[in-house]
Length: 287
Image (cartoon, rainbow, N blue to C red; front, top):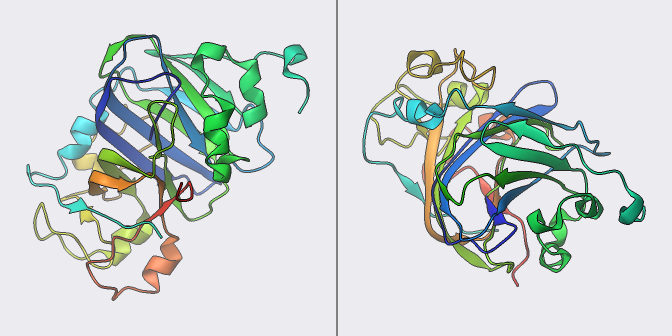
């Protein structure tokens, strides 16, 4: 996801990792390279379980594990990465208490429980309500805001655990707002990583670094996460005894978030064709 409070000059090399905790929460790790001419903030809409509270999201600093995604990539020993191109199917805020601000390594982070609560945040790090009105699907979402301390760079990953309303599904925030506008399509440069016991059961034996497995539609790692990831530094986000699965989303794509479908649905259709990507684009209607 690349929603920014102000216009951004460039965003690239985006990596996202997701795993369900089994306790009603989802782990999410996000990292990108960016360049901005002005102080900026990245904003991630999240499907928070309702009612959202200020502690519905737990921020975790990965400042000591800035190579998190570099290590995950070691599980896929190849420069060739298969690419998927998928078609998309309150109270007056002036008197409201300011939101809690968290110092998370190279970021200053806040959780905004609802769109109305943006008035409790510094206005320079807010996307205008008119932009959110164009994507009504997010009317009851919560939002995490990461204020970027530098104007350019590739900071350490942003990591959080949130109470999810999507049981059995992994949510990847990938909708783009770079200039205050919500475009029907955007340029994607994303690597998605996942851990899921059902994916491990459904996938076949390791064949090669670029082999998309049926029925998952993703590439599985050569070995278990503990063989190439420093799981201790990942602070519980990575399950050491599971595989890691990866797919690339690149080029012009529908401007949507991505949701990996229910794992039980996956297992009940274990013979589906390899061409099925096994995730869907969800988000704004065609504008």
